Image (cartoon, rainbow, N blue to C red; front, top):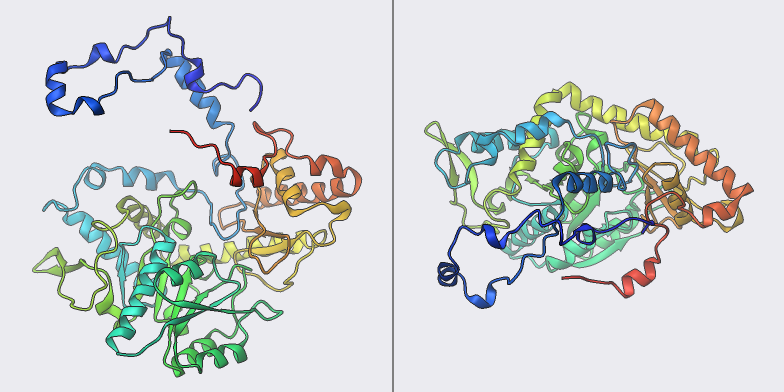
Length: 479
């Protein structure tokens, strides 16, 4: 930590005595003993005595030691970090949305919003029904896989394997395993797509429940054989699962349901403007075609006699997978974003996300190795191959921080050695993209002429380069 940086607890001075929590308790100690066992009562509240102005300054300064989307471009690949309209934040904080319990009778407006949001998502994806319960993308994956499992159990067919390409999101195999499936990995072709011959061979085994496909995949590539792929899976009795976390570049252009997919999950916190990062919150709704509708989690929202109500009539549902309706505040933000943009605006999102990514791809491949040199969608992957003087991907990412930009995703996807995964998103201007290009080119020049400054980066951040291996093996945990 930089010289002079102290924790808020270290700044507290006992002689100030600005606060006295023990003296301000409005309850008699004897009454407290009746409410709470003495063994559970704190003898002291370790809150430092600091004047309000010092507290404000401490956290204000601390916030500027971090990086966020309000500071500049956030080119993380496969995690759509982007501008979050402040109006969405205000709408989600309206008292009718944030100060109501999901079991109150007065929540008709909330139920109507979720019902409308489901209809919007059905139209966007080509699905017949949605559940909004899943709290994140991986949670949505698990929900979808449990639906697939229940479907084949009801059909009295033993299907215990899932096909997953090596270009899929990293959570796909974990979700499939957690749902009780064995995983068969499909190795991508040199063009970054699914090998049709291997897909057909695997499906002919008879025990494969289906394919779990990220499209566009983590290379930022849309599989050009998509309709052939879904036909092969269906012809062999399987189901097709669409990981829609990378939905941005196809909004209003094409729909998973029209491609032949039976089930899809969306990351509302990636595609529809929710602040994303730091572990949440998120929302991973699942959409299904008609034949899978009975298996959706319950309760569902239905309109009956002019009112919205909860329905638990399905005997084949996989059951509740989260309390109440999910992360409702995220649903409000997504609803607001979709209503604000409309159909034409969503198409524009797709067009600009693809344009921005390809602009960067063309400019950066002049200096950096591009393993899959073809038209990309919302993101693309470079590598550290041919970077001079033994400079690695990690070195480049750390040096980017010195220029006031957050580093891209590194070493993922695993099928690209030394991967630099870049996603500018649809919200970045040409000026910010040009600045990022300038920084990347400047770093490449440093790799040739002054490699030590790159290998020892970062130099201008509050904390220097950490020993990631040591941190993973010997973490320091506090109460």
